[in-house]
Length: 295
Image (tube, rainbow, N blue to C red; front, side, top):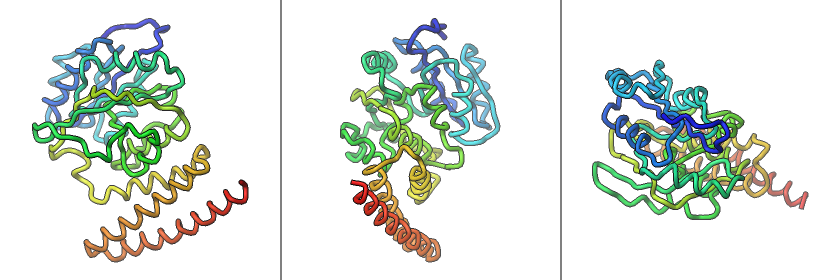
């Protein structure tokens, strides 16, 4: 990799977590090595692969920084990568995605005149089962109110993100206690306290449809989003209208979860979500009343 002077404002450490993905991980690596704006380093974290893939690739690409660990999940792997990063900016790349050759260059050009930004993300192409598909409209990132859109579901693609390392550390990294939705959680924590920028160029290609995707392993993803939002309510940076919207979203998601679990004949769990919903309805009333008093 290219060694850049410490004075360079954009020294990227690319963090790639992987697990049992020989072919796709190599494609991801090659897309980084093909960048017109070179990264300072590439850190590949093997999260306990059992297919010998990373040992094969580390022999083929010895100049990369390879970290081998027992299986702890993608959040732990990403966090370990950042802990070992020497750059001042982190660029995340999932091992089943690839970058366009000008990805980092376009983001550097975008950030040069926007020094206030802590994070920059881009648009992406989608490939599912080897066929191009159009992303659903609810993932449109052009809306100015990125916070409200991000409350519903994760609309920022991790592989599109470059982020100041200092901000990532300040925010406490990815939550390792969330089995999924760890990206949803981190982007919300970032948005409420920092400015982020969106570059509307398709600079990432996401490949979906394979069985080892985390989203295919877990049913009722809103369970994890509610956990994230409950923690967000304790964040002092969440204020006023954003706090109200967060509580409203929790109530909506608890309703959805209650109906979903009822359909699966999980009555106790469904009733638990309904009981929690009533607690948050009361919290919403109290929060609005308090804001009116202070107005």
